Image (cartoon, rainbow, N blue to C red; front, side, top):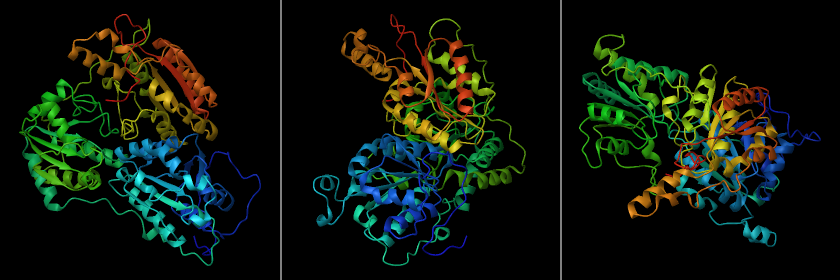
Length: 611
């Protein structure tokens, strides 16, 4: 669409929730530096920007309201900066595209750091704008501008972002915003940060502004493998007697999902997936022989020992998988093909690069780019497009038990009820509590499950779910998350944003009133040291008094029910929750669970996420 250089580009968008409309329409022309920054946000096609308001970007805030009209992007007001970033991460899990975030000064950035770390470890593209007090000391207000002004503010998060900048002119700022968006959206994806000077934002433009051409600064195509690498991989896999595919971090595209099935069937290969990453392959496909796990099961351990060629598609912690299945320090006998771009993000500060795996063919490519040419090469070498006979015993999904009807639910009972609920509906699971019984899942498509939070930071679950639900709004899919009570207690006030903006999400709290993951660690310590195991719950419980979790939700304007204790109560509550979510509102269910700790009917293991 053609437009005058100093006029806003009015892009068509989907219908927004009718909140935060202007009290008085503004017909402001582009005249301030922050107007140009807001215009750049629109040109980047950012539909939303999550934020907690702050004076350090008051100029930009005014421009988003009175120049853009709070549309394209629309502001999502949050009660905590951590929630703003976590919502953007949840959005990216579904769309694989950046969403905007604005963070106030050094203090807002410090609030957001855990969520930024989660997004980094989750390889989620998040476009973040920050701000600092005037760089020129003569322009700082007494006291507050001094404590909210920092040198090199991006240094706070540089170890776990892809790129950051602190530009000092309008032209440099527009280019930095363009670059930050481009880098965040380029595989391997991750968060980026641009820090805006408050004085620059509030300065008048002294002439026409030249904006970067978005069409000429799009993210590059993901790196593809060489023809030689594809051919070598195909030869190894076709010759294999027991080929195995480890489906790791791959795309949410339905076409890519179908292509992964075609590759596995062309090889007759056994497929493994991981609950830490999003749905990658149909979990009840005959070649998906075992349920996805957080850690290898005895069955996956045995299969890994039998495999003679392993194709790793950006599998998270490949060396760790072999150490857990073969034994620490045991050489890997199988030939290993590892397809990943992840090493381009490794910087040495955090150990999320994991151990260095021994591989026979290392291919620096996006896993999504190798699937189709590899399938073609496999079919050519086999001389047929027919499916290969399975080279492993195929899976016959075992019949699942019924949840127990009497007494307090265990986590398995809760999982069975959720499984029954999701079977006949298009549901996106935006998260599961730690320890989820993965034999109950049935992922049929790439949006059935969008993965773990990445960094294991407690409190991200509710906001991640809200972000995913925002991305799925009006899609017809029901967004559901099961979070632990510790996770919800830390992050439940993110629900205010969902209530305010009408973001439909169903959150089930697996509530055992204790940080049980840490209980397990205390039990291990007691056994090792010959101390009383009975003391393992001390300093862990949230039950005297119990936290009113639904009360926390209601305080944010979100309806809910519970605590519920039986499977039948939960099944009925899910139907009521679905009706509420289908009407466009969030809903919370407090489901108490028990794993039968001796003498402790209220003690289970879903709250903690620290491993």
